[in-house]
Image 1: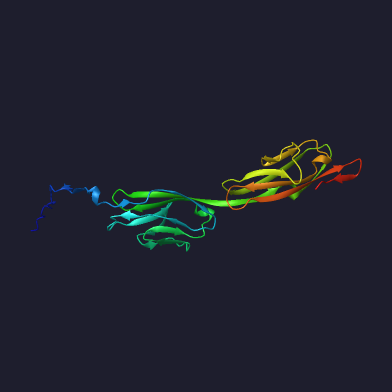
Image 2: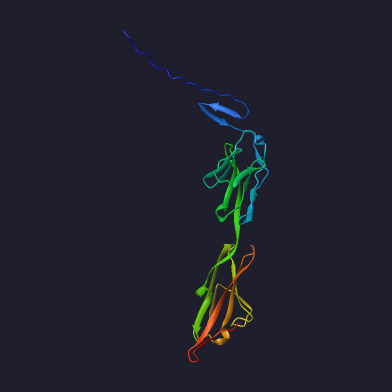
Amino acid sequence: MCRARPVIKPSCIFYQKAEGVHLRSSQATIKVDPATLPTFLTSSQVFKVTDKDTVVLPCEVSNLGTYIMVWKKGNAVLSAGNIKVSPDPRISLIQSYSLEIKEASPQDAGDYVCQIGTIEPREITHTVEILVPPRIFFVSSNGRAEVKKGSSVRLECKASGNPVPKITWSRKNNLLPGGEQTAVTTVLNLENVDRHQAGVYQCTASNGVGEDVTQQIVLHVLCELCKTHYFIN
């Protein structure tokens, strides 16, 4: 005759009153002395880097011990401990845990987080801004405009860069039709043009990064009665 034996579930209640450690009913709360935790010697910073330059993001820590340091950008892990995870050959770890980015490009702009893997993670965030010199990518009429006398003309100039470039108009060897030397605007509107408005108009883009760039628009004013056109250099 076989009798089933009752299954006895082990019951364990353990309590240890020790500094920083309390265990009870299979639950544990670990209190760590803050003085033993790693601390950052580097604070969060903003780095403004010219396109194609190298930037080094510092992350110095004291009392790291066995904790792991991780570099992240968004959801991407760039490094863990002293091991580089990112496949990007431009990225490397130098001087312990500082992150180096070579030939920085606009795609490298953003927030980089240096994190210590404590129970409640500690971290600093560096922001990288890539400065790009100005580049004019559009001028109206491809640099040559022909208009009839008495009509209106719109001269437009567009440029890219970071910071956003400032567009300044000037006129070669002459003042602008309004009498000013320069005008800060992307669009220069000329009304009721005649031969006095003909000439070379210059569009200059500047943003404090690299050199300013300039393109020209040559304006020809057509005269129907005299069957000719005016151009003043």
